[in-house]
Length: 318
Image 1 (tube, rainbow, N blue to C red):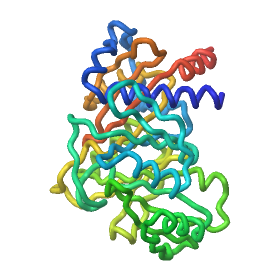
Image 2: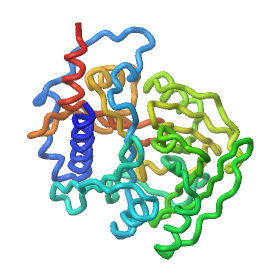
Image 3: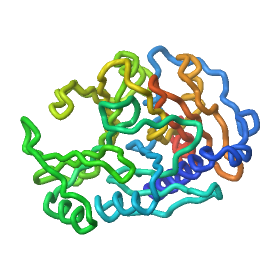
Image 4: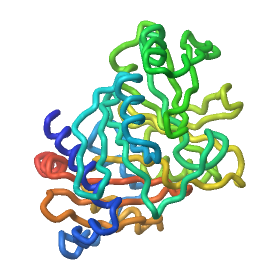
């Protein structure tokens, strides 16, 4: 099962790389060619939670600086294992890093998305990634060995943790959290930080459409606000809002879900009038069907049904 899910994740990256290139998009097929979503009646209160298959969410970031600098930062400095980079001929490819129980994908910027510089409070969109570590001294040493300023760690209020805020080579915010006596489960987790314009709309999207497990609101002293978090397995998505007037960044990052039934997601998105960035479609030559949705701030929520996840659904059917 673990190998099947790793293969599934690789196929998702391939689809992301293809879909990022306008010429390659012509090689994909519409839902009518690759199997269309059937008309179905959804039960009241349906969400995508019932079809989430991978027990985590993958996350991707698009960058503009030389790729080697990003790979060095997330690989050698943060210590994540770099997996194979997939290239389908679009001049870029997608670099994959095993970040705990999920994959971090790094790919070049694409032309049809908007990007805003700055930190968590400077624009809406995916603005922060939080990773967890056990050894502050070793992590600090790797920064210095690679010619980067040492992270400045400070105590996290009301906890025994310490954290530092740094930026990656593309200027995107990264939070480093040191967990004393960390368990393997704690170190396998990541947190994806979204800055949102309309908190109620975003809460409704992740609560009643995606259907993630909602956690109690928490005071965030670093950004002097309250964050609202949702969890699926090892991955947490946290929402912060600093008003409705920030510029929108809908390109710097996005979230990927592996699902067992993408037609369920398609039907639910249409019923709830969710923005569909790319409709339900297959990818010629691959046992993969996908739909790309936008959350209320335009952040990509990308759902993919693979052969492995589909077989799991069929096997579980009565």
